[in-house]
Amino acid sequence: PIYPKAADSSTFSDIDSMGIEKIVLTASGGPFRTLTKKQLSVVTRQQALKHPNWSMGPKISVDSATLMNKGLEVIEACYLFAVEPHLIEVMVHPESVVHSMVRYADGSVIAQLGRPDMRTSITHCLSWPERLPSGVEPLDLVKTGSLTFEKPDLDRFPCLRLAYEALATGGTATTVLSAANETAVAAFLDDRVSFIQLPDIVERTLAQTKIQTADDLDTILKADNTARQIAHTIVQTL
Image (cartoon, rainbow, N blue to C red; front, side):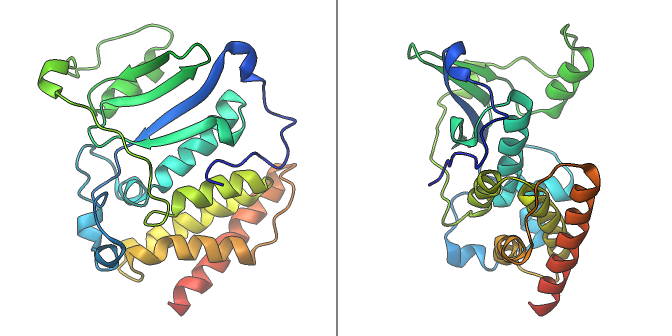
């Protein structure tokens, strides 16, 4: 399933009592949103770094192109809000104006909108619980025009699926996912692997790594190190 339940739900809260049905995260879809799998097989590092909406560093720009960044955000949201993975939905929203939504049992949806500028988020974090000027121009919905939403294509962009599966597995699986992805992206930025090989490296690393219960920091750090070694070996074979 796209949005599986976690293997161990004992740590999650009951958001039904708050009237919440879904937390919705939006993804721009990155620079390759409309490309076919054949076209994705020949994209370059330079193309992956040209995000259509956001100005970000190389690693996050590649993660946005693979949709892994949204998978990592789903993992973050599960722990920040103590909710099960299947209650967090991802929508592709090319305009990057709606940044998140909460769907309630009464049928209403509350959304957070703004220009695609990281200064808004950074200022919000630094000034919370107050609101301070960020230097970002106000959002003009008339100039923005129409807003579009699409379901993520997990066949062309399987990294999002892998993130949900790691959450469902639990334990150190999400640590392995993150470590393998960082290793794979670093190899891609060095032109040692292709774009379309990134999810394969992550998936193979997850398959070859023993997943343990993440009870302490030492276990997590060891899992991270082991996953990087396995992913590095996989990269060398490609």
